[in-house]
Length: 196
Length: 196
DNA sequence: CACTTCATGTAACTGGTTACATGATTGT
DNA sequence: ACAATCATGTAACCAGTTACATGAAGTG
Image (cartoon, rainbow over all chains, first blue to last red; front, side, top):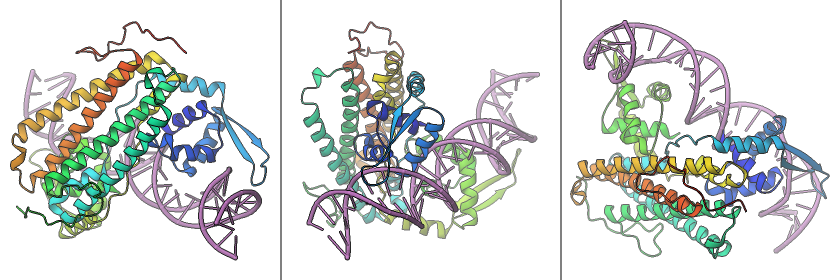
């Protein structure tokens, strides 16, 4: 159950309300773990009863009360213990890859369009991460122990997006829809391959 | 619910028993989707009642009866329809990345060891895929419409593993445990960085 | 004789997704 | 007045994981 640990990491970096956590999962945390607010509130409640986080209710300056979550000593102990256990191998799960492989039994044009859409998405993500890196880590050689891991995970995000982008380009080139600079949904070029 | 579609693709390529499907998910299919036999049997039952696959019971030549699953006309229709719907963006979910980011709050040595283990795993996978590619697709320029998608998904597997391998190497280099040619679990070198 | 492989399933639990629900504040 | 953002939650459902369970055939 890793959402708990993702939350512990984020709260260890900086205490937050459930809402603020949700926004973090939409932003920086988002490229290695995602969660909706429902999941986050549910998990936070469980963690509170388990004593991993403590809540301080701040009477809302307008609006509902803010419930600030902080990692307890026990939470930090759990986080340290978990960090020492080896990570189980993650199994890949890509609906997109399944779809590519469905090509001989499905709609060729639609799948090519899907690859182009996917390409565009990853291009955008890559750009976003690269801007983030340029802004926040102009000189990666001088990072402290606290920032280094955050930077390295961002590097993972950049590598992942670059890889997907290259892969999509390879597929489009091989399948006969060469990507133009601005190509994203324009897949209407004539194709020079016929069935079988 | 994409397991259904992964099963449809696999059965469309070649009819199989639940057991045989399970083995496929352990092998070639395994690098884009994984499933246990429990999940597969449960899903197959659902698909049978939904009319997407038809079962032919073959009285077992020794052992229990084999239940051969074949895609029905309706199954093929569903597969084609699904292939034409755009793929929802997949959200990343990497416990490993969470762990890297937990470094300032956890066990530095253990996490470095974990990165090294992860690296070794991806090196092995990469080698495995590359052997597969060299054996089955010695000349990728001459693939037909049926084999091309299978080949391209394998290319995705290769790119993914290469990317992870490179990322792990970058992390090990940056964090002070340079990988040797055979490094996999030997992370006992003295580290030249101290906390903060 | 024990271990692995082939072959099938049930049941309980846990985690993730989707839909529903409320209500105040701030900006256009 | 309306929409967006801040802020919190409940409930139902669906998918995935883990544990349990059986039994025959082939191999060392």
